Image (cartoon, rainbow, N blue to C red; front, top):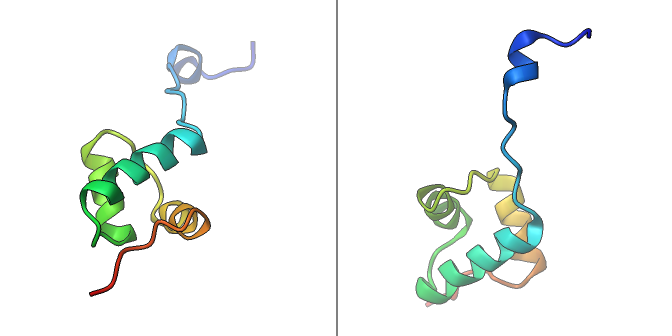
Amino acid sequence: MGVARSSFYADPSPKPGDAAIIAEIQAITDEFEGYGYRRVGAELRHRGLVVNAKKVRRLMRENDLNPRRR
């Protein structure tokens, strides 16, 4: 077949789409208004979504989910 045995039997987990990530980020930022992208990323990992910090930062900036300043 031309495929490594480990790759053939590996079950790749589907990656969540941007819409699912944005929904989780909105839930987190509604609950914790002062969280920045680092804390939001940590909370996403705690909830089971592994997302790159750069992507979290970009999605928060594009959707105006930045933290509220004091």
